[in-house]
Length: 194
Length: 194
DNA sequence: AAAGAACGTAGACAAATATCTATGGAAGGG
DNA sequence: CCCTTCCATAGATATTTGTCTACGTTCTTT
Image (cartoon, rainbow over all chains, first blue to last red; front, side, top):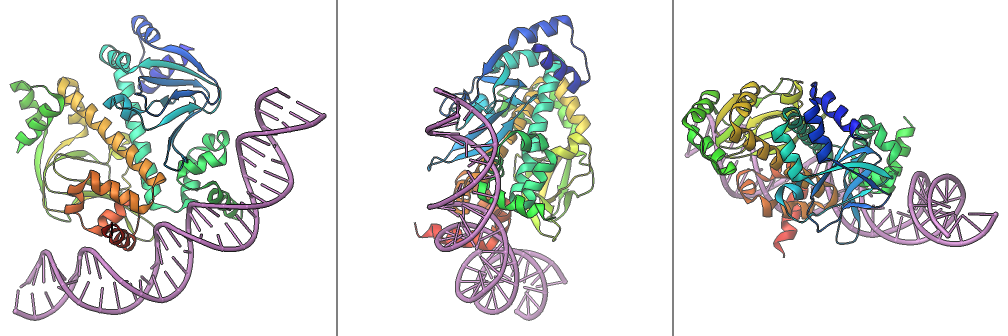
């Protein structure tokens, strides 16, 4: 199971890991299985782990005053699940993270992550790349959210993330885009005509 | 002028810099003055510099098919201006960054930044903190954009960033929030009644 | 196989927001 | 100082999106 992670690191950084480095990484990451709907993180708790998704799909969401869920992030294989805000600031999380499909994870504590970053250059490089990618994705999504109509946002999303459209139902996608499932349904209908 | 930057680094990281380290940083960062409306980065160019704002205010925005500007980011003193996506991926930027007020910057190339990160631990730490903060801010804003009404979004923004509300006109703030200036004007009027 | 939940779609209506035009005042450049 | 540009607001109207209810289908669970 750890092989997926080691491959991920070497591929992303175009480097190799020594046996010692591999051992350190394997020691730090613990396998964990989550059944569908099981929580990885619950609102109000401090996020102590980061999870590398080996197989499965997860979602991160907040719940507003009216009890409505707002999807802030979706994760599938080779994504890192965690609430960075909570993990970095050590504050109670405003979000829930749970499994949408049965999911296999490799989890490590924030402390272990910092340790690995310090000891293994390519691990540090990998996390930097991961951070950059997250930020860029977030910026793009934000730009799309403030600039585009619901229709354009969905088109962009479907073009860039076809895997997500396949694996999550429409009401989840709609929430992720900041629209209702009804609007998404209408938008898709419009799109078919073209 | 470099003192602002050195202070910023030591404060953020709770550490001190040796004379050699300070010299490296000063050598890497070049002072630059921008007049109001002058570009720091223009759409289509690759972002080669990152700028630390010593004094002034800047904005980052895209321009859509209809020629409408969409503000994706605002910067004031002690913020770092750059298009990370372009700088990291070495792709032409989709954004413009220009000075909203006359601005004093300290600029460094991406290569110099990487060099400083490698040579100066606390510089690496500082950039990591900066990246984390950016990401968290971006996540929050995204969450707000998809979850809240225009009114709530403005309230949150005004509460969290009173300096921005003071220094940028309403149509800029409105664009930043993803609404029109007309809507923002109405929202503010409503808020006064409370 | 049956029962219940989850899901997508639809239509009618309501609410939020955008668009457009106009106006007066403030700010900035010569 | 005058002139121009920028800025905030207002009202009328159009468009987009949300809300609610309903229904048929598919998926889960027992």
